[in-house]
Length: 430
Image 1 (spheres, helix red, strand yellow):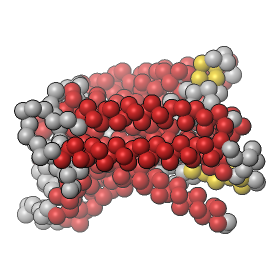
Image 2 (cartoon, rainbow, N blue to C red):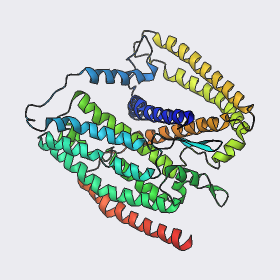
Image 3 (cartoon, rainbow, N blue to C red):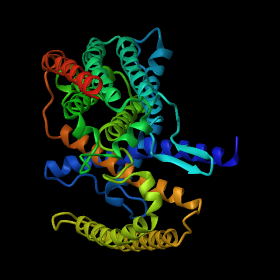
Image 4 (cartoon, rainbow, N blue to C red):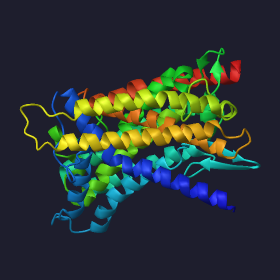
């Protein structure tokens, strides 16, 4: 194994871990800020470290510290199977994390005769791994609900199982239709397929080729991640907190983090299957490598207005209403962050300029293209995470019977029709 192989393997693993774990406090922050925006209120804006609030992001890290040092509580009525009771949230969290590891964040970096995948687990059957491992997460909820010896927790566990059975079928059939369309189970090859065009004009994104499959898979993934309006597993208005009723401190935090990692993974799989993954529309990896100067110049042009808009957005949102007392620290924080953002923009401009002057046979060009693709993937990923959050705070929770009706009477028949039509088009019409 060459040194380059080891380097890119470690880099991919670290990148996947950062995107899976460090995005948790960011997603919690987005959850609160988007919720506050929809409900016309401020959201978290007080917790700070030496005056730096970062728009409320510090509150998420304060929550982590609180959960780490909170007393571990074990209900006295749990007399047997306590170790499985503790293991249950770990199973849910680990399954969500492992499912995320097969997502490709950029195209393979090709240097000479070698190819280096930008994926933590670069296995050929990536989509099958995701379907298998992500389904294991419900086992943790079942064990946690059953071993809580609480009727509300048990009801939540039963709901989790019934949801998984009802929507896993529709999800699997929807993904099978995409496998038939792309002709592969390799996620990287699926993204490469979407870099082409239909009729030389329309991007061959999965959502445009298979809109019904996209609707089915996205809906099923909402259920798989236990996000509203399908969050009946923890329906507070009906069963206290369902599966999570007897959990506290870090045991609850593992369930909590597992939900956000699962949401992140669901967003990543939606982007990969239906929205071109790390590719830009009408642009393939080969085109970017050949036209790296154009890519670098466009990046240099875009970063200036983006930086100006971000600074103006920060200034506008870092003001304090007249009715809210303040210590004046936000002015200092804003000034420091402005300088940091400008410095970051200058460094990015210098790097882009350096890439533009690289010789056409430089080995750094594929790396530069991979960095651009990682950035594109992260932007798409965060857009769909925000979509998950907006849906949660827009739609009311469905009743349990409504969820079952939607899964069995609508999504499953639609997925069967879709896979039948897909088979006719792919096999019959080629």
